Length: 118
Image 1 (cartoon, one colour):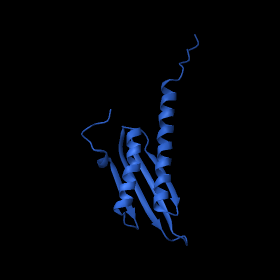
Image 2 (image 1 turned 45 degrees about the horizontal axis):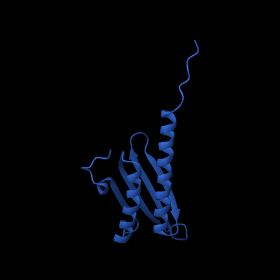
Image 3 (image 1 turned 60 degrees about the horizontal axis):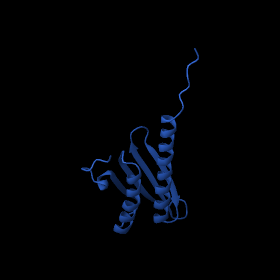
Image 4 (image 1 turned 45 degrees about the vertical axis):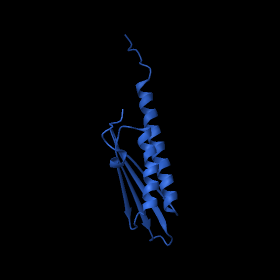
């Protein structure tokens, strides 16, 4: 059960690198990250970095996500030509990683126990 004294917003760290996060972009990222917190209540912290990279000749937005959770942390990175698109792709990728982690946990937990040969 999720700890009711900790607000989901306090678990979320949003950072803009080489760009300023507008209130609309910040609100969109918070709304999308809340989906991750609803799926997995054991998340300790989510950090999302949105980087505006202009060095490749075209404008590219790189979104990086870091989920701190019991066990190994989950890391993801995506790039797109639009900041909102990069955020959508990142949240989808982090959601897939969380589902993969949960299914692997259930597979280990419910694996048949082999009997030792006597």
